[in-house]
Length: 253
Image (cartoon, rainbow, N blue to C red; front, side, top):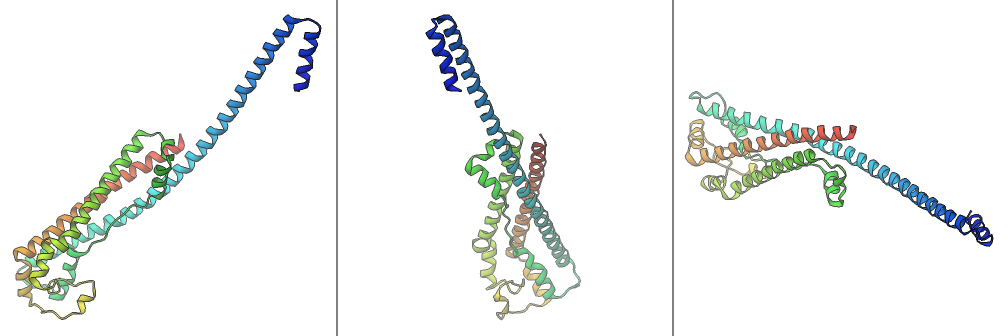
């Protein structure tokens, strides 16, 4: 094809048809420019197609991640709510002037005040997308806002959880452990310490012990911490629901 065009140009110059030569040359330049533009358009189309496929895959992965996280949140919220209900049951029992339960049963119920389970969202696809810059493909301000709220609640949960751990080793829980020598008289430990000998309390002694200011403060601290943790989990779930809904909308756009 190149030889063909070259032959035409040479023929026009040989024949002295300069005007036609320039017209032809301009036409050839226009054809070359059009060819380049078409090639660029095709290249842009291919790039956009690849980006769209990449975007679709990212959305699908994010939906999977946040759906799995949402299911875990449902279980975590239910567990925290059950713990709070158990705590309320404990308070109602010890407020009753008549003994309706054994000391060992009360100790088992009271164990909930010292049970701690951390929660960490499983969102590896999101972390990877942020790390490699793919998250910019989504271009959704509302999605960014929902994700920011999600992580604000997650950070708040983590801080509250860590505070609970510090309370056990440095706060009122630690002071109570020092006062009693061990938590064994009032709770059933989940560790091997449960096998260690301790002074068993009569029902009246147990009630008196849990009503002491230090014990009351320790239990109340634990209750407030668990209630705040439950609130953080619910906030995370609300944001998670919004994230999933927004991702599905983006997937259909």
